[in-house]
Image (cartoon, rainbow, N blue to C red):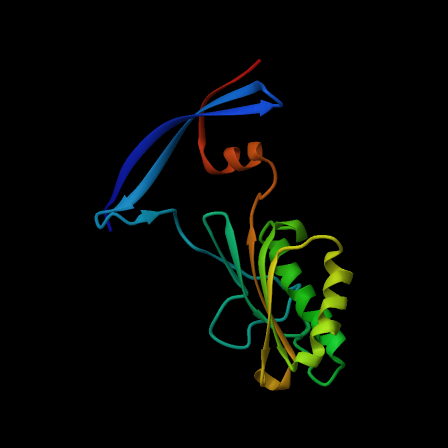
Length: 187
């Protein structure tokens, strides 16, 4: 694939109230293929011993363009043992901990979770999931879906998927990690 480069220069003005406090002159180099599709670099495969090892032909997560996509996490433990025979709350706590450990390895914290999807066996487990979620996330509220399903692999009662944003902090962090500064002037 041959990449074409299309640089663009922009000015970003940051304000404190009505007063401008900083101006950033930035050059963003967009990479596109000959077919015109936007290209943001390679995919990084993420793996950590702090979460259950994959049970199939997949990785724990992939990282691309500042986003981390966590594969479905069951309640398996990092040592390879299982919790499918344990109460729902224990399975949920382990699945969420696996997800958070993978995100942490990828450079994300709890507050960087953009979206989380929980597949649960039986809607009667919904309130138990909410209690465990509150215990681990506190007041952090990512976009979230809870999907009741008839069954999951190995007899587990919960599976979690997530999307995180690396460096989802301040605008300065985002600018610094995603674009090249031409010059910055502060008043």
